[in-house]
Amino acid sequence: MSDLVEVLRELQYGNIPQLLRDAGIRGEVGDCLSCPIALYLIERTGCVRADVGSDVTTLMYEDGTYESASNPTNVEAFVDRFDGLGYPDLIRSE
Image (cartoon, rainbow, N blue to C red; front, side, top):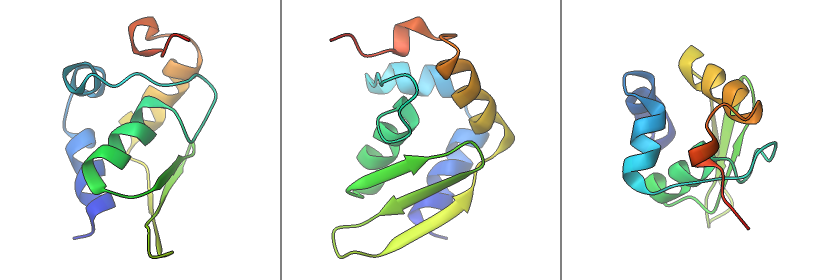
């Protein structure tokens, strides 16, 4: 199983907002490279870039390789709610 699939599975069966709070991760609204899930994926997988789209997430590694996977439904729902300002405590303040 790939790193991405493993972490997406963890998110799929976990409480995403609480996992992010427990990890101390806050991100930027409307930025697929700096949303909390992208930052969590970078921390958990060691990738250098995580692009969390509405349907698919892509990770880029230091050696230039990429891996992509479809987002679980609850990841899609989290992204929509986060971008709609539904988790103000997970928004990074300037």
